[in-house]
Amino acid sequence: MRLILIILIIINFVLATFIIIGEDDHDSIINNLDSSTKENNQPAAKGNLQIKEKIEQSCWVWSVFLLDSNEDYKKWASKINPMFEIKTDNSTAKWWVYLPPQRSLDAMTEKLVLLESNGFKVYPNTTPGKMRWSISMGRFSEESGARQFIVKLKKIGLHSAVLNKDTRNFKRIFIEIMTPPTEIDSFELNRLKDIHLSSEFQKIRCDEI
Image 1 (tube, helix red, strand yellow):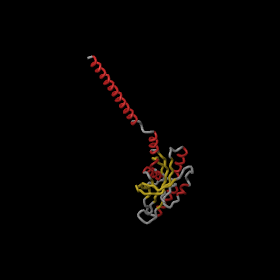
Image 2: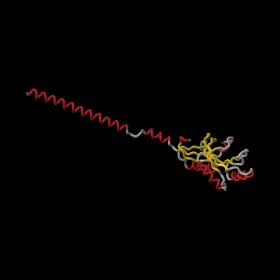
Image 3: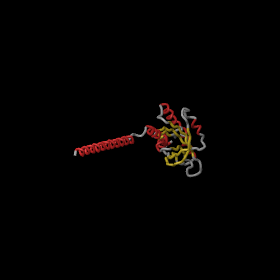
Image 4: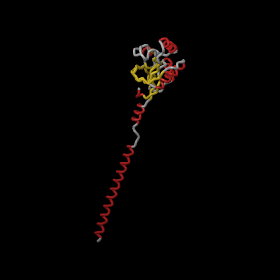
């Protein structure tokens, strides 16, 4: 009888040991899963954030479209401070500002004198057709730029300018600044807007240039 009792005690001891070991393994597995979950929930690497910031970086762009395809852009560029890197491309102009056909050559010439004496660079149309005696005055990539230009025309007493959406590609001169303009940059860019009255100054995403 005593022998049976001893055997039962030994069996219970062994079973208890296995149960404790099993619980320790279970806790270890849960802890490992928790650690893995926390690692997966960590914020994206700093490098990824830097790439996103680079993609969404803002650029400041001054630009002007050349309405005459034969025009030598170097004449325009000669008035730009050499501190800037001048670039050219063929870009899309979506908005067109022009004076509708005048009643005669003399009437058109009168408008030309008014415009040119006030610093506007314009292109008269003398080709026979429905747009004969009209004057092309500017192409713009943004409607806001075109409307600002019309305000300048009204200041010299010209209120008959037409704004049309007319998407075409033209040669463009432009300057891009990758960081916010310095005081000197701003001064020079504003001076360019006064020289080239049909130019635009925009803040856009660098990857959209």
